[in-house]
Image 1 (cartoon, one colour):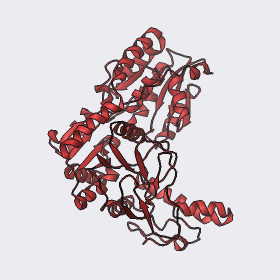
Image 2: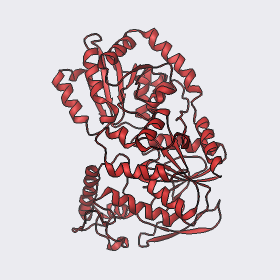
Image 3: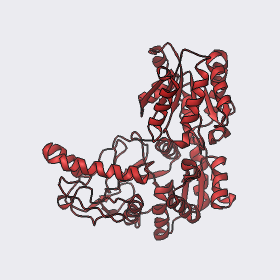
Image 4: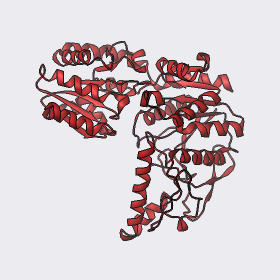
Length: 469
């Protein structure tokens, strides 16, 4: 079986749980003999996924180590690439796609502006920098012509203005990306199209229309989760497009399945639930042996945004400190509420109890999970909550909100409603003060996690595919 999979990101360059989930699922599918072509908007390099090809929006193929399989001709709009395992060739448009997870319209504009600034300074920073810019389709220039809502026509790299292949409008870029992928894969041979979250839904729908192949859309997070009552209607409309046009919807939890049904009026029988998984890890004793903090550590790790409930974490922490005076709270991550949380901690007078290390990745995440005495996930609306499973695999007990999909599969976790600050604080105090409680939670949760592996998720996904092929 051959699957064309469309996603936003892929490890090691990730900004949230989506990339981790995509890596886990593709690895699980590959182990079951499924061939996956994973399409990601940017060629990051260094990715690993057995039996999975990685394709960037330049149309370049990479091997499973992220190495280019073809040379990059920066003067050509098209590259002829081959599919050795499939046979045949396809001419691919080399048009970058400036799409990243968790963009807002404002952050999109800020990012494009920064790219323009980098391009303008390139001429004074040497040939190597200019070469690097060419690799992402930018040229050093003092001029740029942006039109709101419409991107400039593609030009050979030598003639491009900085950022001219992007648009001030994030949704215009999604439309352009849809056109690129339709051109790239309209003639390609595959059995199923599998699109992850809203940015890829239009491309999935377009490819379904031109190829006649079935479309699976995979919902890891909805606009109602991310924004609550203040949704971006354009994102909601694109989510609706994908959900209605799909042959089957995969939701990461029954919690998300219910939201899809209630907000989009999709029949429940069209929505299959495939919980995320995790790959077991040995206890990271080497990290705990290195622990320099004599204090008890409570960890929040995730985007510091409305959806993740960082404000409830801070307010609960203020109630914990009088009872556990040697506690340190770590709020790891970035997001639009980060500075507000720093300001609130200072206002409460507890800055000596808080640490804001920023975005962590790779070994830093492993170390932080291993060093924490308790992991807290107070999400306002969490479709799944993969980080809770990640914490448990490093033998760290978890406190999670009841408004999370992971609460469906974890019986042995402490749970509270996200808004119940008193209850959240009480759970933290008890977990910190009673080592035997933490040990019991870890032991019982470890047994639950053993059955929550990615091969199980892959098998359920294959069942969905087989109903369509």
